[in-house]
Image (cartoon, rainbow, N blue to C red; front, top):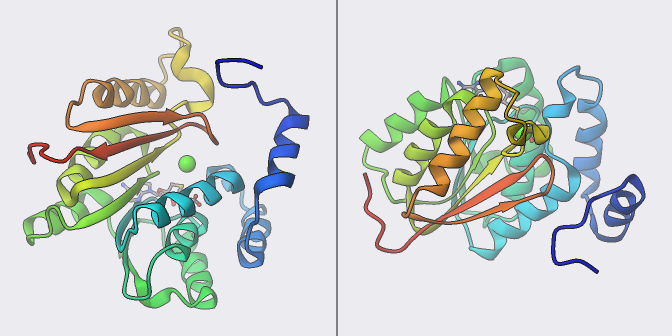
Length: 226
Ligand code: SAH
Ligand code: CA
């Protein structure tokens, strides 16, 4: 037993998958199809998909945002937990990958819930803010280009209702954030993001060592919206 988070060996990880992950068949199929793409490692892990679905269901999220759709795996985990009158604003810039996502949204019967915005996510988020949608969303999942994480986070915080939740992927970045000799631009950006959230009294914070690190930030009730 230990009072720190366990190190996942291959055997323990296999056990965790086998004894907890009930991946819907459609998502297994999408994982197999995406595995052929050289960028397949960008997809969230299956146990992380189950965790996202659980979170979205827990907070009864009806209006959600996703930044970074890729072939649609995480969006399907989010929509699976949303009610029929829900909305997922899905942001990406890549038409090839999101065509795959759209095909799977159709098959899953959630295409009506998803509003795909093919534009730089910051444009979409700022448009939502300027069109009066501040404080109207329940959940946001941030998983696109790492150098804009702070900007995405700030916009999402404005778009979320008090009590709403932001989940941010890859915040451990393969562990390189802990290696001060690593000064790669993306590593530096994620390190800066992690510090930004740590210093932010507007949110309740937990960094969960699932997948490549998932930071959860809940907008506090009474947080200034700026
Ligand atoms: N959440 C996805 C993985 C996302 S990969 C999953 O679990 O399957 C990152 C995605 O961010 C890619 O699809 C890429 O096209 C998109 N992206 C990169 N820069 C972006 C930007 N400026 N605005 C919106 N999307 C962007
Ligand atoms: Ca990711």
